[in-house]
Every structure is written in C-alpha cells, then in structure tokens.
Image 1: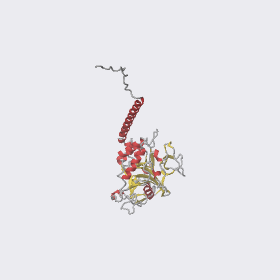
Image 2 (image 1 turned 90 degrees about the vertical axis):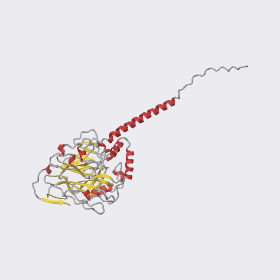
Image 3 (image 1 turned 180 degrees about the horizontal axis):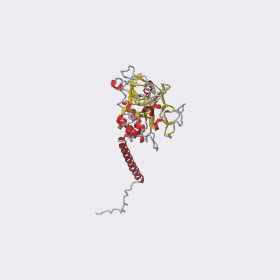
Image 4 (image 1 turned 180 degrees about the vertical axis):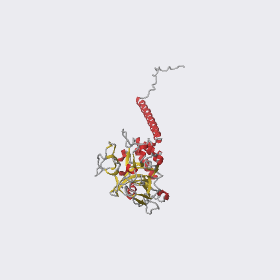
Length: 414
C-alpha cells in the first residue's frame, strides 16, 4: 500500500491575544467614568444626608432637600419639582376656619392718650362675608412701662376662594419700638463678623418684642444689602428696600427715590425684588409671575410674607398660607400700607413671633408666640447659633421703659 507523505508545513506563529489599542482606551475611559460617577454620587449622597439633618437648610425635610439641590447645581430641577407639587396640591377651595383662628387677647385697652400712634381701624376681610372676629385687632406681646401695647395682631382670610385659610397681620408702633437687622452667614453671606447675628443675646432680649423673617436669598432677591457700614452687595436703584436708620426707625420704599438714598443716618438697607404696593394701591404688574420670585413667582397660592408702612409710619407684617402675589398685596393695602413689598415665601421661611415677659428681663424662644400656630418652625430659631439667615427684630425704645408723667388715658380697640 502506498502512503502519501503530507507536505511539510512549518509551525505557525503563536496567536496573539492582544486587542487593538482603541479597545484598551475605551475600557480605561469607561472605568474612569464609572469611578467619577461613583465618587460624585457618593459625594452627593453624603452631602444630601448632612443637609437633611441640618436645620440651617430649613425646618422640613422637603425644604432641606430643596436648599441642598439649589446649592449643588440642580436648582432648575428643584423649581420644576416644586411647581409640579403645587400643581398637584393646590389649597382647598371653600370652607370656613374655626372662629378661634381669628386671635385672642384684649381688643380694648386703656392707655395714655399721647406718646404713641393710634390703633389702626379693623381690617375689612378679602372674603365676601366676614366672620365674627375677623379683622379685629388684638394687643399682644410686651407693653411699655405705662401699659401701652406696641404690637397688635389681626387675622383675615386671604381671598374669596380659599376661605378655610387664615393669614396673620401684625401692626407695630415705631414710636415705641426700634428696629434691628440681624445678618447671617448664609444670608447675606460673606466673610464678615456681624455684630447683630443669631443668636439673640440675653442682653438684647431684655427689650425684645418681635422678630420676623427677611427676604429671599441674595442670589434671588434682585437687590443689595448694606449694614454696619459695609456694602455687602451693591444696592440696586429701583429695588424695594427696607431701610433702618441709626435711631432705630424702620421704613420701606423704592431705592433711589426721595428719602431712599444713602446717607450717614442709615444703619441698614435690605432689598428684595420691587415694590408690591405703592401709593396705597397694588402695583400694576402683578400679573407677571416672573417678577415675584425666581422659583414659584406670583402665580401659586403658597405661604408668603410681606412688609408695609402706613401713612403715619406704622409697620405692618403679613404672613400666611394660600396667598398669590395679588392676595398679599391686597391684604397689605387693607391693613393700611401705603407702600409694601414681598419678603420670603414658602412654609419654612415665613415666621413672625411676639415675645412676652417682664420688662428688662431676658427672654428666650420659650417666651415667643408665633403669629399663626401653623407657622413652620418655632420662635426659638432666632435664639439658635445655627440660624444663618437674616431677620428683623423690634425692641422697646428706652423711652418706652420709663413711666409716664401724665395720667390721661384713652380707650382703644376694636
């Protein structure tokens, strides 16, 4: 049998297992991207966890998450989420609040005839049919040495639709009270050592009567900030401005108009958006929501606060739920404001408190009472070292601590 010998084949070269360079570069890029993603996600998770347990970001977890988001570059998403939330959770239509919601405390007070502003007239409710006690003023908080009330509170419904809600109005007498702006490390921020910053000291609390929130974060306020001789942020001409003079007198108006320009008599200027009320009437551009807040604007009926000044110089604060920007302006006007502005909005940032206690004795947050029981966050925030937002206080003037020489009295009240 013949066998054919196979032809000689040289041994083949060993097969290479090395992949093309582009495959290795792609793998390295994917690994790097995964590492960065894991690291960034971990960082966000850790900072979010800290924020959710940080009271400086707000009282509620929702507010803390929102503040964290705006501080970490996802403000647009936070605004969208808030908008969707309020679309899905509008305030209740109709209904009635309990009559106890319209305040307590004396409505008729015997006081000296002079040395103070007259008590304001009752507020006409924005609702079509006022309820008993609605719009009636109640004397609250510390009084002067002669028993004159320095603060009155009244309560009305915000409009004729959301009639189960109540907003609070506080009227403050500047002839008996002096104002002070307290600054914070977050608002206005900056590397400044503020003489007046939370916590309110025991010495300052000896004459404290009221404390209340200021305006938006400065990046949203569309205005500037001046205090203690420092221009923290440049003041904007045309901005609504709370001005506190060195004698403790507070007023507000449009910066750059007569009486609202810088002078050596001014202690503080806090700006926020533009005037909401002017010449005793709501301004004409309330229908433009973009003018009244970078997040929710003026469209939604949410918690809002505002400040106004009356013809005789009294300061009025309005705060409460279910208010559009138009509702806030309307209540300010009904409370007697000839000029008014919006302060902060949303549940965690709207807070007004009055304080009770013996004259010239220190008080704490335990002595405070919120304007509305539903206000989110107790009066103790102003006595906490972690409170890093700005706020205003009203305290008794030295003249209010001295007994009067006249015994003439007058009965005031609604």
